[in-house]
Image 1 (tube, protein in one colour):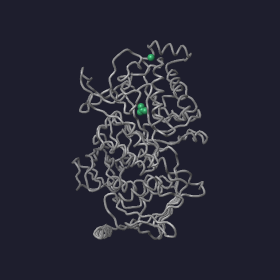
Image 2 (tube, helix red, strand yellow):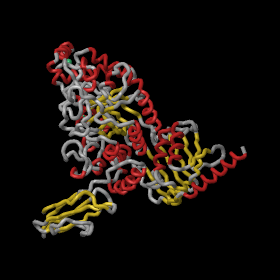
Image 3 (cartoon, protein in one colour):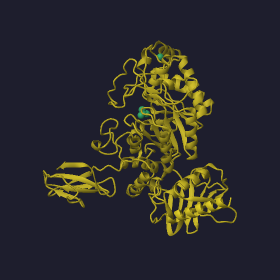
Image 4 (cartoon, helix red, strand yellow):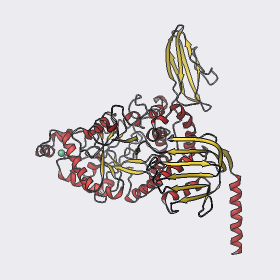
Length: 620
Ligand code: ACM
Ligand code: ZN
């Protein structure tokens, strides 16, 4: 017994010693992303030490948020303890007894003084976001370096989001991503106060969700013949008898784990179960649900145009969808379910006797209205279960019920039309919200979707405003927010996935959280350089930037006046005008150049001490 006590004392001593051996840091400048509504930096500091006393007001130590804070602090090397009664803590979390109308359901008030840190909020979500802001006050490398003392500036922050829908979508069908990666996705969403995880679970290339009543969906539909080493655009059809070995799916237990993991991070999960199109995996599993008496297979790569479609004239399809949604509703507690509806090529409906008979029976005008009818039938069923549906903007093509929410992706036009009709809208136009598009010059990027003009660099993402000016104030109220979408046709592994997501997610978060008058690209450029380091220290891969110079020209008496600009702060352009290729020793661009007619300018970017991308040539 005595021996154990001695051991414990020795252990405690070693731990204290370790704690006191860590690095110390003084943070002088706050670089919070997304930018808070109000932030006032004050004089003085508070020193956060390894041993951190937490205090809760009106909040149980068993609360989810508190559990998260505790384990997050421990992961960073802090040793949180709890105090109550008259003892003053270093870090106070207080749930307001009286609702503060300004900050609403997700906002918080954070104060740092020389005595400590206080976060106040109306909800645990607000406290959680206040804590995320605190984390960003710590040094950029805090995730990989143990600090024994960090002085953070005294400040006062009042903060709340501009939009309630701050979404991030992930396609796990074109390529499959494991549980650990889904959790990593949720972690980074939480760090940037994103709150809706749109999980794209069914596709031509794979069905990824366990459904007990239809086991073939995952026995057959979750697997495809492996063509991962081949060009996505020109897939070789499977040979007869070739085994389907690539894929995977999420069991009900997995889903429960993800939904809980997300909830701990104040993120709601929206499953997307597509109908009537993008359904090769369904028809490969249950061919009787299609219009044609044919053998379908799970698409091995590109499948375009996506002609496979569920037979809207067959009652079995509605039965199937009802059964599937019965189970989906049990797995996903959030109010919204995404039903897809995009790119449903109706060629087979045009010639299918059952579909044509249905159109006649219901006196519908065309196949688009047949899709609308099927969507409305399923929506009715889901509404009875207390759920609301979301569909891609194609659902506007026939008729749309007022209760369904439209996700505008082909541009903002669908969203504008829907808001004018009185439907709620989530804006996610391909430009700039599709993160499967390149973020830098295609010559230096991994393969991505389509041609080089599909280009959504960080600066363009930062311009995103989900509220189109075409809408009046009343119509604008229907814009719930926006979302970035990550389709994975060309993304096969975790590293590439993170590269496409980051740091663009940070820009998106500021577009969806911060008031318009608090957004500043120049200020964001400064902040993002810190956040790139933070993200790297958190163990994510990321894209460091787009280094092709942005060139502007003006006529000049002696030729052309040429200005170069960089997207990434700290980029230096080296240049030549004698035709030779520039090196890191070539002159650096400092001010606009006057170039004679016929001149050739060659540039080379240097960023963080390294050559980036290649040599670019410009003639004038
Ligand atoms: C989509 O990108 N097809 C919604
Ligand atoms: Zn049919």
